[in-house]
Amino acid sequence: MLPVKDAESIILNLVKSLKLEDTEIVGLDAAVGRILAAPVTSKLDFPYWDNSAMDGYAIRYEDVKDSNPNNPVTLEVVEEIPAGCPPKVTLTTGQAARIFTGAMMPNGADTIVIQENTQKEGNKVKILSAPQPQEFVRHKASFYQAGTPMLQPGIKIGAAEIAVLATAQCTQLTVYRLPKVAILSTGDELVSPDSPLQPGQIVDSNQYALASLVAQSGAIPIKLGIIPDKPQILKSAIKRAINSTDIVLSTGGVSVGDYDYIDRLLAELGGEIHIRSVAVKPGKPLTVATFANDCLYFGIPGNPVSALVSCWRFVLPALKKLSGLANNYQPAFVKAITRGDLRAGGKRETYLWGRLHLVNGNYEFVLAGGSHSSGNLINLAQTNGLAVVPIGEKLLAAGTEVNVMQVGLPLVD
Image 1 (cartoon, rainbow, N blue to C red):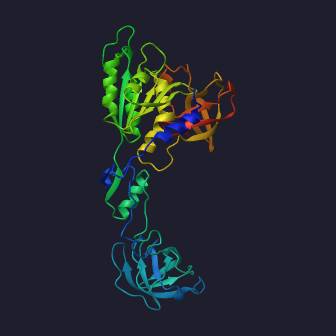
Image 2 (cartoon, rainbow, N blue to C red):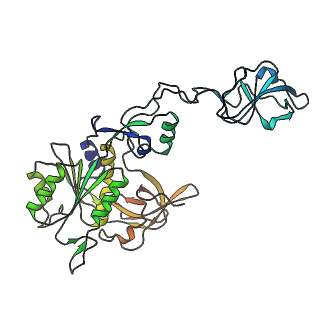
């Protein structure tokens, strides 16, 4: 059995990220969640021009530098400049322009006096206190200079990036295509959720859970359904999957039972097997193979908790790297105090599911109640953290600091 970190390293080294030919052009409305594939620059400076950061008066600093409440300077108001309207007047000595937030600075002005520090009297304004030079002026190109890199490839586009792109009028983007992930469940005992359940049968939850996980990760899940434990049928399904997708996920058939055919079939199809088992609980049986066409194959356990934990720990980082993400594809771990005892067998790195909470700025972990069996997915609902009990440890007592891998739902305060 490989240690978990070794398995992670092997998997990430096997991943070949999407190439520049694996890209497409999308509009701004379709860009959220996509991975940028080419640098973005703009022909526009930002701010586009000098503008006011506050409501007040545009003035010449030299005119008011000695102003104070006991000796205010009075200026003539020669123009009003709303946002969106270009100034019409160039200020000269003794003049001011009424200005509003976001409006262009008039020529001749270099500073803003906020309206709270003024007193308006007809077409005159008293400056009650001296501002700082260039105060409340947002200068052209102070945030971004036209022609320089704005966003680098390999980042995931979110709301903040969309705002930047819209501001820069970058409406067409080069992004990596969405990876395709084939998902198949193996086992004669499996039935779909909409089928009548007969004695001895098991509902296939993996197909739906993994498809949703893949979709949430920004890839395209391709559900191939339930494949019976018949080698030729299974081999045909796997061949079809590896020839049409970037990653294949199969659940079941990777242990040492009489009906576990996956490893043998992968070898027959020309796959090179790099991992067969990992010292992790749940999820010890893990087959990882590659093919000449760069398809990456994950044979993960059929038990539903094992399947999800295997995907959270090993498959999602691979998928993120393959998608073109430049960094931050490894799982995110935080230090947390466990509110209850955490128990393990000590022979494998053990992942116990539950809820992370942020309490007064510190993370706390609450173990899910009930059985922590790899076949019990009921108490997996609402999980957002997996507490890690290292090899050699059988008990981490309540109050102990533990590593917790963030998964699934956002943190709960």
